Length: 332
Image (cartoon, rainbow, N blue to C red; front, side, top):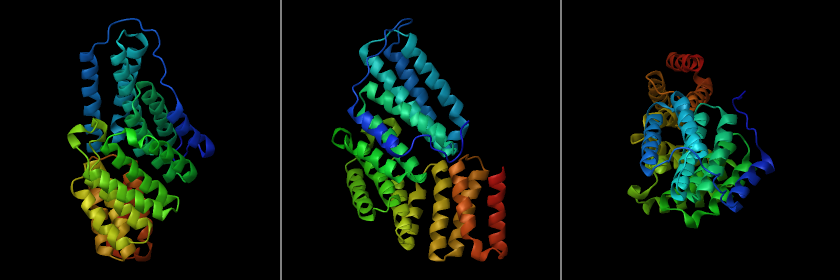
């Protein structure tokens, strides 16, 4: 049974998982049998996965977990029973890695942390078999952020060290993502100078990005995402006023699911500055999105933190109204 807030791998073992990915040799595909898997078949499978990415960004991952599992089962059957060329095998393993990473993200968004970690680990194995450093680094970044948010700071830093090891072999979009995730991991580990340096590297790489050349699973990453990272950096380093500006910029062009989560962070930032009106406005924006079809446990958990921050004003009618709205979302 998956338990919320629980990681099955921690400490040295978590670091070792990333180190093994860096040094492992790609596995040989098993002897194939059955129908021929053609490039057209893989293209159609790729379209399904791309569509799944888009739908997940609109309403949250929880709604599409079973769809992603079904896609992974289909890809696995192709690999196990199909006949295919070496190039097709690499593409199939790459797709498997991408779906595993997406399943990890969806599970993380639903606060199913044990399941998320297992999917990320599977993504690392499949990306190595595919010979795809970019996909592997992508999985390591997400896995490290999850670990950092679950207070596995040493493991998170180790995973990001593994991603850093392939930085010279990945495109600018992935280098920007690596640096952004390093910012998150370092600041949670109390390494503010390293976090600030990583944030600068992320903006530098962002300026070199060619969005048309970015892998489909990285096309969500852009200025809006990096402004969110910047805002959380400022928030965690006691610069709440700067945080509100960055976070407000981050929500303007974000997908609905990301807006639902980020407005909660905006509310936290306004609370830190003492701006009750700003905090309430951001809270209601997040709540509206969650009430109207975005399903994100992370978004609800962020609002639960906001509700705690309203404690000094809990007797004010408008604060009571906002708190009751959050309670209703939490219990739904």
